[in-house]
Amino acid sequence: MNVAEKLAREIRRVAGLRHHYEEIGDVAILLMDAALEQGCKAIGSGDPIAMIAAGQDLEGFSE
Image (cartoon, rainbow, N blue to C red; front, side):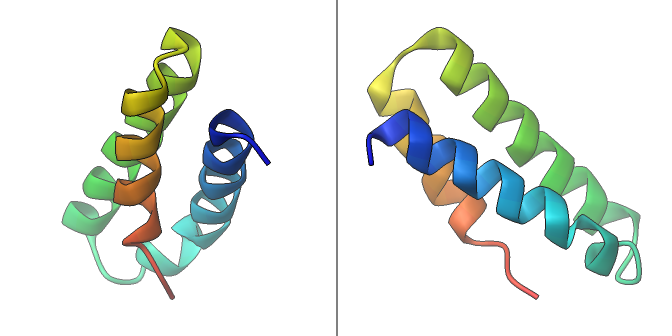
């Protein structure tokens, strides 16, 4: 799996977790939305370093 595929899978995983964060509050949702947006922009840029950084940010979200 290449870096873009891995990031896309992380975006999908975190987007699926989003509903759990709605119970925690607005700040959690804002942080998650910002990380998801960063991930989408990184894929669009084609920059592997940006994709790795975005993926690491997304990996920090769990249930």
